[in-house]
Structure formats: structure tokens, C-alpha cells
Length: 96
Image (cartoon, rainbow, N blue to C red; front, side, top):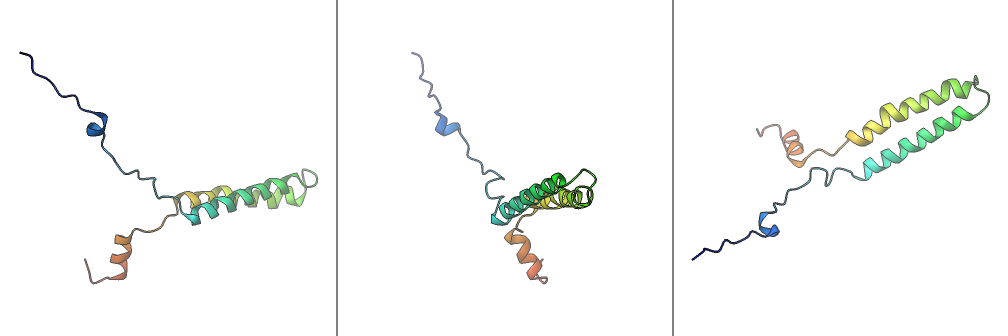
């Protein structure tokens, strides 16, 4: 007689793994992202004021856009809270 083979259900074979992106973004990151968007919009606004060779188009606008793209946006992406283990070892230098 043939033996019955039990089929595995999807619940048995599915392994749950924790996503590393689960708690990455905090309020601070969203505030920095919003600040970056505001500075970018201000930079493009100053670019449109006056003629093409005005002070605001040639000096203020590039500075604001540089600050937004090179400083604020990367900070909003890469800045994150230190883990508790790292903070504990930094606070207690006697523990190894």
C-alpha cells in the first residue's frame, strides 16, 4: 500500500525575519528630509529671481542647493540613533 506524504503548508515553511529597515527612520530623519526639501525649493526660487547674472542666481542659489544636496539630504539618510549596546560601553569605560 502507498504511504501518505504530508504536504508542508506555507505556514510551516515560511520563516519570519526582521527587516533591517523596520525602525530606521525616526522623527529626526523626517525633519531633516523636510528641511532639505525646503532649502532645495528656496535655492531654486532664488535661481529664478532677477536676470540670469544676478547675485541671487549666481551666489545664493548654488550655496543653498549645495547645502541641501551635499549636507542635509545625506544627513537625513545616514544619521541614526546609536544602539543601546554601543551607548552602554561608551558610558562605562571600565566594562569590556
